[in-house]
Picture (cartoon, rainbow, N blue to C red):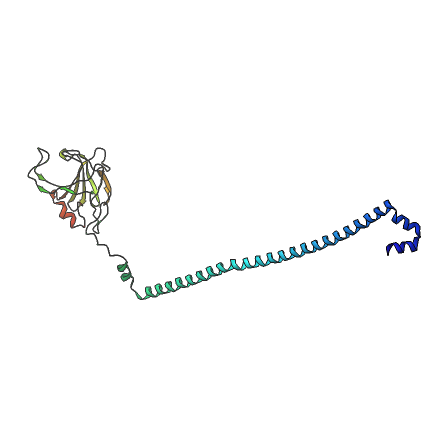
Length: 269
């Protein structure tokens, strides 16, 4: 058909050209190349269309996945909030029960159920005052009591013990038994370093064997009950650190233990 048309339009010269060996081959080659390019272009457009469709589908799936993950993430938070709300409601209910109990239960009964009431000490602690205003003169156990002794630990000293010995450690605090005025402060024979306090009404208290340099008050000073006035030592006729505590009524020594007990103080541990 192509040859017939060319012959009718251009005559035999054109047909000659077509059937010329060299020119004919070139024309056929060019026609084949154009046809191949056309098919490739069509294929490329088809591939591009498929790629665009795939991309759009992947983007849609990605959006759906994001939405699903958001829903999944919201579920634990909702559960947690619900649990917190339930727990808060339980706490509120327990608080209301406790408040109601407090209104109907005497406070003393509640305290007694929680812990036993401590026993009221019959005597004052060291340095602290009894209700009568007296204090324990030193901390420690009784090592020698008031009265006669069969054997004195120090030869040449009276066998009658005029005071109460408290086995306190060296340099431990010595406290004024009650308010008073310093009547004597210094060395006094077998008493060693000594303080005598005048409490009025004929009552005096004495503190013997005070450590060297540990007398903290002077004659005429006014002291208060429980005030630190000296440090425990072993001066004078003594075999070790202790406090010789002495109580005098109108100049006569008396047993310090019952005297102090009557004033709310237990001498010794």
